[in-house]
Image (cartoon, rainbow, N blue to C red; front, side):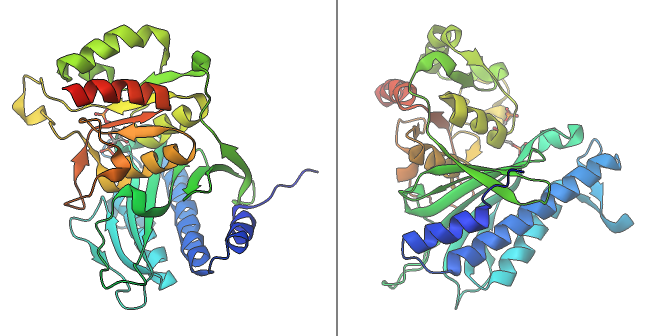
Length: 327
Ligand code: AFP
């Protein structure tokens, strides 16, 4: 019988090796509990056939709620129990959620259920999170942190049962859920150097809405690589981490319907782009926005700020970044 190391055991040793406190363990335990709970709701919702067209699930036979709201509530519940979170930023809440302003130690930014168009089909969605730490030495406790200030960032792919997490200057690691609902078997992820496995991932229906230089880059490069697109960042980025290549969601600047224009990009900086950019950096990759600026350097002005995103293998991202800077 082969038994594997659990995530919690891995993390305990990690904290010990780096002389860190146990506070982060308490936070991660809550995040893991929340993810398992979401996973369970997602699977049982699909089993009962009540995820439905609108992505709604019937909770305890009473309230009908969107799966996104259920996931949000589950996460906030578990975060609250830690007593370690100052404030939370969630895709599902317009306002910042104050949790433990006095005793808290961390800021957390999360998308509880990313890729909601997959819900009605029971296909993969993500729970993405980034974590920053209170400035224990200084006076400011500002929650709007750039990705380079995160101490960890990760994502669960649901209901597939994987957790990928990166720790600052300590690599990107992947775990799989086992039959006892433990995340186990740490595997360090490094983006492959050689282009043979590289993939490109973008919403192909949008390609003629990109600015001209990006359209031209796509035309010249698309045949060199395999194309894959799931429509849930966590799933698409999961593949890029293993296979290399690039996921991109460029700015939409040429749409006939003005309501569909997205000159700033579509994805959210704090709980989508910075999260995957952080994981990518720790796996040896890079990420930039529409101006070629590193995603991790962008200082957010608003907690729901949007950005364009190009993330993946360094040579590819640097190539397109040069072109973007020139534009
Ligand atoms: P939703 O959670 O609103 O469905 O958005 C998912 C997402 O933010 C990200 O996970 C995908 O990569 C991207 O949007 C997909 O967008 P398109 O449907 O425009 O391709």
